[in-house]
Amino acid sequence: MSVDPAILIHVVHIIFCVLIFSPLAAILALVIRDAIRKRGKWGINLMPGACHQCGTPLPMIRKLANWRPGNVERQDVS
Image (cartoon, rainbow, N blue to C red):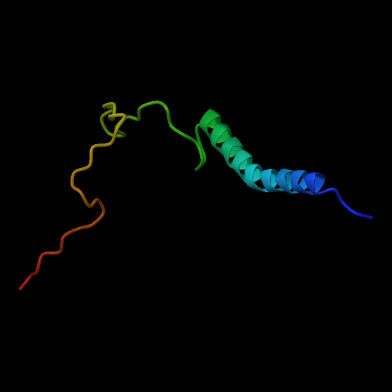
């Protein structure tokens, strides 16, 4: 019993597509679900936030204070 190479290539192509696109579809479903629910760690916030203390709207694009955020310069105390 021999298998036609064209059918074998077609089957491998389908398996490859399923293995690649299934995780992508699952991630996309999580992003859409959490964006609609407006909570969770996968959603995208499309509305501008506001300051918790004064209520001032925050900018849509974050403006960095320096080129290396999170890196605090140490000062030698001698």
